[in-house]
Amino acid sequence: MLKRFFSYYKPHKRLFIIDFSSAVVVAILELAFPVAVQWFIDKLLPSGDWNTIVTIGVLLLIVYLVSTVLQFIVSYLGHKLGINIETDMREQLFTHVQRQSFRFFDNTKTGHVMSRITNDLFDIGELAHHGPEDFFIAIMTFIGAFLIMFNINPELAIIAIIMVPFLVWLVTFCNVKMNHAWKNMYSKIADVNARVEDSVSGARVVQSFTNEEFEINRFKKDNGSFRLAKLVAYKVMAGTHSSIYMMTRLVTLVVLVVGAWFSFNGKLTYGELVSFVLYVNVLIKPVDKISALLELYPKGMAGFRRFLDLIDQEPEIKDRPDAEAVKGLMGDIRFNDVHFRYDEHKAVLEGINLNIRAGETIAFVGPSGAGKTTICSLIPRFYDVNEGAISIDGIDIRDMTKHSLRSHIGIVQQDVFLFTGTIKENIAYGKKNASEEEIFEAARKAHLVDFIASLPEGYETQIGERGLKLSGGQKQRLAIARMFLKNPPILILDEATSALDTATEKIIQQALNELAANRTTLVIAHRLATIRDADRVIVVTEEGIAEDGTYSELVNQGGIFAKLHHIQFQEV
Ligand code: ADP
Ligand code: MG
Image (cartoon, rainbow, N blue to C red; front, side, top):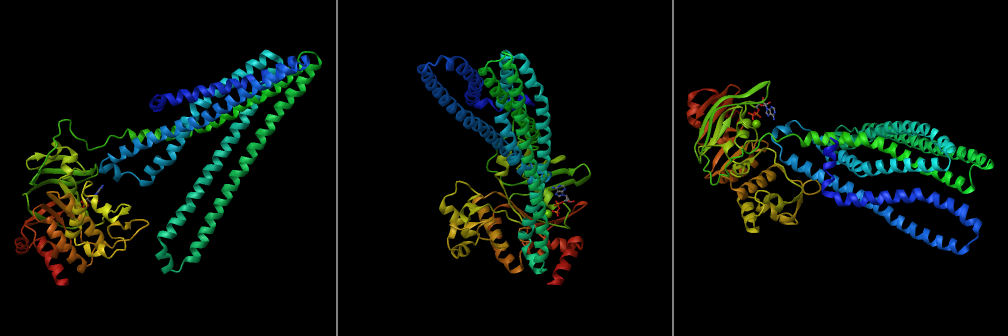
């Protein structure tokens, strides 16, 4: 897995090398500083050579400047590296999700994909930046500082390093506590968010039950829990910082006292003592870094594992290597002994045979859950059949490229999905390179013009989350306009008007009839009045296709359809 992780560095090799080598130089300068101080105190001060002192001062200034620039590079380019890798991964993930088949979306929660695309990738990005850099630099400075200390005075070096394990233990212990506290805080803020979301989207329900007080009290409780969790987190953090501070000072103090004693016995010069005390800090700093990394590593790697889980899921429906990009299909659709199931448990379609001639309008009726939508989902290959075959114009749909097949099929469903954007953009979703004239023409054919003219900004009116809300009928007409633009030879209307009132349905129906002309049209409908003009009616039940014939034939047959007909027209 590490190998795959590092493969993401490849496109940013140069950035990595610059960042990493700058970090190495910064570390070396940091290691060299106490030695310089030691030399300054022991050699330079007693000599009283003011000129050299000034020269050294200027040299040090230059070194500091270089070091400052390098620190900036490390911090900025290091983060840039992390962000670049994060961005690459996010794009890869989004592209991958776009290519997934319907079954993937059936089984995936939106929230999970979202959290992978955001939170998980933040953690991975942080690790990608801090991981190799901090790890090597920390180890390098730690070992370097220890070796130099050992060289100055082995006994004192060992005394200093004996205390390091305690520090490691302390830092790790604090980190575990911090982790718990932050996790708890995140779960509490999620609760608060959920409350806000519920009460905003459920505002109508809240107010109609006059439950505002109740909601406020519930919110207060969650908000209070969050406050408490956050307080605990900060308390742990304060505790961590102060105990690490205390421990660091303790090591410094011990080194100072023991060092002073050594110095009385002539084992240590003043300069050595000062540089030793300085090295204690150089030695301890990496401990902090490594322990932060110990926390970051499992988080980032867990995120990376979740990322790989998704990335490694092959899309279910793929083009065959020899798939043909078909053009100009007429829409002659055949189901040949089609079997289909969504999962192992239950077969939905068992041996469906169906011939639909090009240009025909076919209505599917039957109880909900019988499989009407499923039949229609197989034609654009949203799912693949388990047995049997579906062909269009005599070509098995699995021998066509997905793209070319789907470009021949248009679907209007009960709930129309509108994207955030303008009316115009939403219509143009049916044909991305449509000209203005084409868009206006489509809107006209969909009987949308009067409505759009009534809007303050016409075609440029924003819809969606922060914009205009459309009624069901308006949304349907927008979906129809999209279809006029796409202009597919095969049209599927899946309960497109079922959610509308009868008056609106009549208007939409007119637009739909115009849309259906000269296309192979499959209509799924509940209200039989809307399918009077269909060439054929097919009754689908759980057992499969039960009846197939013209409207009047089926009524005269006196079967399932006749019963449906009588029930519906008695009501009216
Ligand atoms: P209809 O459109 O006739 O109401 P559907 O084709 O939607 O019926 O559903 C047929 C059967 O398949 C039902 O039992 C339904 O529960 C099941 N089903 C539909 N969609 C899915 C899905 N995405 N995953 C699993 N089962 C499904
Ligand atoms: Mg359905």
